[in-house]
Length: 425
Image 1 (cartoon, rainbow, N blue to C red):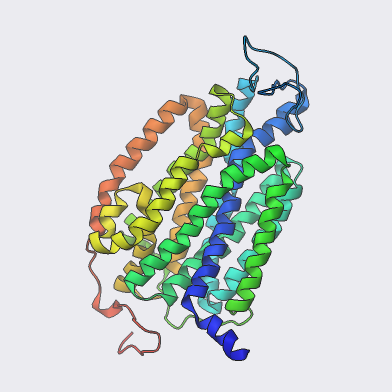
Image 2 (cartoon, rainbow, N blue to C red; image 1 turned 135 degrees about the horizontal axis):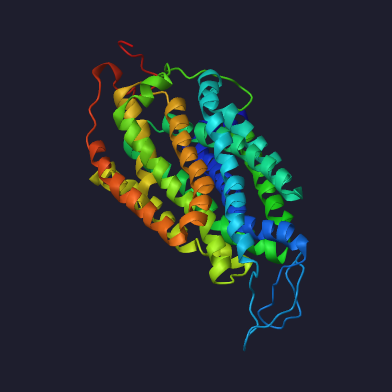
């Protein structure tokens, strides 16, 4: 029995499975909130004023849950429509702030998590992240006010930091070969794609047909399952410092190649964050879209993202991460392994700091995206917001050519095996 347990703990592919499940849990919770937040706030805030107008598509006999209905018919057909467009426009800011709180808390927590990893290893922080995410999902399930939702969202940000940074660092640690690392990162980020793919339609459908607590309780069950898997496969109760000395954050941030990759991740998430905040409200304003369609609108984007992660993970090793980085749909599958490669090549093979920086870049993008996107959409309109985002992406993309063949430093060549002692430090 002890031998079997040791085998499970030493298997890199079982570790990869645990990490992938953790990423699914993190990102399905991340994406569930966004599409239902506009409808939730509309029902709880504007609905309480007794002025909501919502009509059923078919018979008119069933009404939306928790809505106050004034029956009105349009010519010829009955439609579902949100009458108070001015409130929806104001709601852009509220929804943006709710979504941005997670990124802000995650941004503040990431440097701390990187330091903790250097002292305890990767296992314990990942397990703590799972526990925090479990508590956050329960708070979401029973939240009954905007303030309580904000607290739950902030706790989710802390849990995400304790999940993403050690998870990616652990993969870079146990897969030292660049080709294997790229494949492993692609599989783990497929967990992200699954979470992002399932989150919006799952959350929207469950909110409309079952109730808002149901999807969060399901995620809480997934968090419990992942916690059990971590106890069986990892060593969350044993602390072990990372053998390789960490590179100071200042040195990493002053590396121009790491900076280009990090800013690229930031712009990628900025684009998605602005779109995720404003598109559901745009659909409510112009299309009278029912709640379940607010999540389905992201389905084509996420399917393409999932395909890119699996198809281009190996291709990135053949044609270079720079060429793939120009296409932002392939960003994470190329840039995440590239971050570890840059640290191996130019610094020391300690991955807590570099993935803390990577996650900080993503958080800055997602903090600015929802918070600024809603305000910009309110000021200049959805169309001009999309034009601005397109220009930003096109202007920055050519900088990834700099990552085609980054120079290394002789004194910081990668350690291919932790069992081998370096000749010099």
